[in-house]
Structures are given as structure tokens and as C-alpha cells.
Image 1 (cartoon, rainbow, N blue to C red):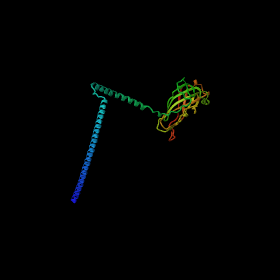
Image 2 (image 1 turned 90 degrees about the vertical axis):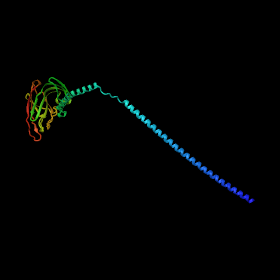
Image 3 (image 1 turned 60 degrees about the vertical axis):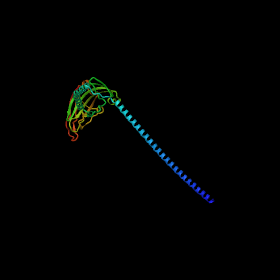
Image 4 (image 1 turned 180 degrees about the vertical axis):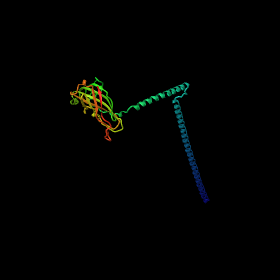
Length: 300
């Protein structure tokens, strides 16, 4: 009897243990199922979150595009508003345009002719560098007979003056522009120490030019003046600069001054002078003379 109770107790214990094990396994299965459900819920939440973010991004981009489009439309409207309205010209405007074109066509030939005349005048003008301007010396004066002239050298009176005209010596053309009898007072002390305080002199102004293609040597400074039986030579210091080289056809000016003294007759007795051009032009290359000197009588 006792053994049977023991056996029954053992069997009951085994049954309880098995039940406990089954319950634990069922609990584990339930826990695993709950965990899987929670994971799926989390995944669904993540997917929902991603969908919300993408929806927000799409809405933001669409808002930006709408704003950009609105800004472009506003800019285009502003540009259209700022552009001036163009009106088609009416009949009166067309008539005015035609009249203006006709007036321009009428004045065009006149303007062309005027421009042509100006161009012709400019072509005939000689450039400034086609003349060699040389210093004329301390005593050179310009003016008419009876005129008093003051310069850096002194105060001078032109007593008599005339123009002798042109003369040719071989290929050298000489234009004697002025022959003057001058007297005056020298105020420049450095010059007065050489010439004296009171002076009289004859002044000859000329322009010389080689009219040939030959290179010419000619010394105009050697020209002398015959006056009332006296022969005068040009003063080296008081005459202007001269140049004997006439290789080109460029004109040159020359001023010669002939000083008078107490041995010469007074001014009122000097009425005629003779300009003796003693130099002969020579070809620089061949050293041969291409002309002979000449004389010019001048009445004062």
C-alpha cells in the first residue's frame, strides 16, 4: 500500500514538472511572439517616419519652385513695365522723315564741295618744316620808313627802306625782300662796347633757294655793297646766321648787316646802293661752278 502511494506521488511530481516545463515553453513562445510584434511595429514606425520626411521634402521643394516661378514672373512683369511703349509713326512723322532725308541729300553735295576746297587749300599750304629759319642778328629790325623800333639791343629808326626783288645766280634764286638804312642808340652794354652807343647800318634781308636737283654750295655772306664810292662788307658778329650748304631745295633766310661810321656820307646823301653778289654757286660733287655772281642796283 505504501509503495503504491509512493509511486502515485512520484508520478504526480513528474506530471507537475512536465506541466511546469510546458508552461515555461509556452511563456517563452509568447514572449518571442511579443518581441517579434514589437520589432514589426518599430519597423512600421520607421517606414512611416521616412514617408513623412519624404513628404515634407517634396512639399518644401514644390513650395520653393512655386516661389521661384513667382519671382521670375514678377521680374518679367517689371521689365515689361520699364520698357517704353513704342508707337507706330503716323503719317506726319513719315512726312517729316522724308523732308529731313531730302534736306540731307541736298546739303551733302555742298558739304562735299566745301570739304574738297578745304583739302585743296591744305594741300597747297607748305608745311612748317619746309623753311630753314635762321637767327637774324642783334641789329635786325622790321618796319616802315620813319618808324622807330625798340628791341633788346636798343632803339632804332628806319630812315629809308625798299624791296629789291628777285635775282638769280645759277640755280640759286635770291629774293631780296628788304634793304634798309637804319640809325639808333644801342642800350645793350655788351654790344655797345663793340659797336658804340650810336650806330648806323644798312640791313639786307633775303630768302635763298636752290631750284635744281644738284647739291650746291653758295656763300651769300660774301655779298658786298657799293655806296657812294665805298665798298662795305657784312659784319660777321652783327649779321644773322648764314649757311652755304644748299644740297636740298629748302629755302633759307639770311640777314646781312653793314655798319657805317663817320667816314661814310650822312644818311640824307645815301640814295642809291649796289648789291654785289660775288659768290658763284658750285656743284658740291664736281666742284664746278654752275653760275656767276651778279650785281643789283637799289634806289633808297
